[in-house]
Length: 375
Length: 216
Image 1 (cartoon, rainbow over the protein chains, first blue to last red):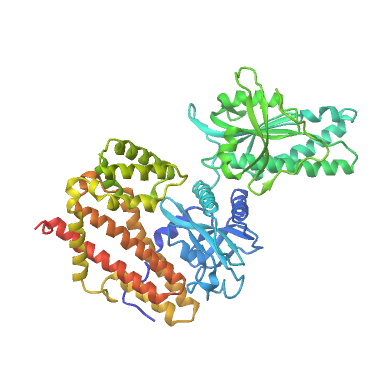
Image 2: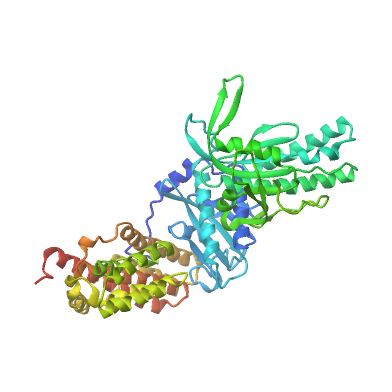
């Protein structure tokens, strides 16, 4: 069949140039994109989600969740080839009953996709890819609030795409940036570790730090300060630093539980760790020279972090009200804990963080947190 | 002031307004109503109070106020019904839409034909790409319009008629796309024809506004 009027512009060059300029095609998976897919999948309760870049003849997956080993598919006949042409989200509730998609090889055969929600991802005005969630069962509706949150995730994905490869820590002297700090304190473990040999204690702490460093890396944090019993982690970035920091806290708690089970098998006592996440503005500066550099965080947030660290005596995961606010509906919070800090007229209210989205805290089984507030 | 606020409602797409913004507008409208002694003003005040009492104001009801309380509009808008009749007359004069009338309608017809006449997924993918492109073009038009809404100074009976029919045309186009996805191709074609008919009417309307021939 041929038409006198072209149905769509054949020239896709400017967009393709933008895709290739990202420098991401055919690169390795990255945790920062993988976790967005996981969040997208959890948010819309779908078995699969992905971030695709739409190249000339293929859609290539920068990140996938629940899709096995697939890395790319031909572009023609995909939902994304449709979605990339629109600035609005594309939601197909029941692909089998939509004549535009019912015969697609991805619907009538192959994975038999029935539900698709996709947002175009734009970088510098060009739609380079999509963030999508898909299901193999049709749906009758999709919650508009979930779609709104999905849209926010797409904006985070765009921010990540536009700063590829990963930006270095900014250190513009005198410039205030939004940051989130996570502090973790092993002080509650001190009495439990009494009676162990120094080799045993060192061995436990090594395992702990190695596990925590892996979790911090997965969520894109930077360990800014570490000592034998405490560490401070910095999260920066335009949109998602608070979500990543809170997710990291939840993940750390889960990792600690796994470690404690391993310790139990070796008849070692469990480690207890107080974790707190707070957010604010700071000036980040690199002090020193090429031979010896140190990241310095200037601002009220840094001082508050020091004071909180000294008071984290319970095996709890806590966030400040600002963090809970930034997480919005993603925050699963528990009881309120009021802490009196020197220099603050009012007690600081913290909330126990039970989860971020579907990522839930596994409560420690060996210890019971105290009832009521502190301070 | 009250008349200007009602006029503002006539040229604003309330679907784009947040609940908070809408409530702020309603509070301003309420203050203006309280200075009115006319029966219409009092009745509108009650309507505003009702909307302020609910969590999410009813946008459709609010959008209907300029018609429901037309007597409160600025005096210049007294010629609004006349302008409306004039535009509707213009639409009646225009020939019905045919396949080749405009580029967008021809493209839409081609996409529908691809869906209706072929069983292969390649042709349907072609149709999907064509429809997505067309939809994007039409909604870019709306987005541009939303970014630069009509100012009070630009409001006249004729421009308000143009504004309202433009939004109606774009809504009808949207319905045409929705029906296509449901496989109701004939109804989709009918909607697209109706929407395009209005858009063609608006082009003529704008030309007449520019040349001043509407005023004659």
